[in-house]
Amino acid sequence: MGRLVLKGVSRKFNNSFAVNNVNLEVNEGEFLCLLGPSGCGKTTVLRLAAGLDTPSSGEIFLDDKKITGANRECGFVFQEYALFPWRTVRGNIEFGPEVKGMQKEEVKRLSQHYIDLVGLTGFENHFPHELSGGMKQRVGIARAYANNPKLLLMDEPFGALDAQTRNIMQGELLRIWEQEHISALFVTHSVDEAVYLADRVVVMSARPGTVKEMFEINLPRPRVRTSPEANELRNSILKSLGAEIKKLVPQV
Image (tube, rainbow, N blue to C red; front, side):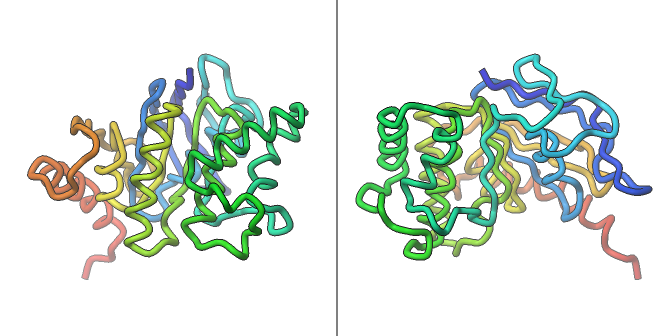
């Protein structure tokens, strides 16, 4: 499972809307990317889906169950690594299963599965300060998956990485997603990243954000970033996104 549905969702802060009348679906097992100008409410959509914030109007459902509070069936991966500095790689990954009260043997088996899956075998007992940025984000991804979520929410998780590491992590994320096949809602500012990762790309309008346009990415994986088909999709998405960014630029 893992089907997310937003119906007419708006979120108002003080006297202005961050997002307004958002209608969006993430299908079961789908990888969907959100693109939009800065400040259009992409992170707000993620927070609402996670139940970390409440809509001013509209409804949100995960597998037909209305989200009314913090949603433990979602896994969240942040741009900031947000790891516990006093816990090792294994300790960070095991935190969620421990809180759920799982048996110690099962917790250890589960953590080792995801340590191996994200390529951190041999680093189980390292602390966050001993890891590179890419390795820290691998821990964040493993920690999210270890909670057995129905939906993975990712807020620019590779935004702080250098270009080379970012490309590597995109490939690693797809490898893990194809094995686990959990629905994913991924926020990014990179059109290239969206075309490389997503089954669909949703372009949001300038603030207040709403769904402006959707693009189906019907390209086989693994994708060639520079293929004519990928370039054509990138150009179409850039045109749609650029029109919204222009709305934010003062006219001279």
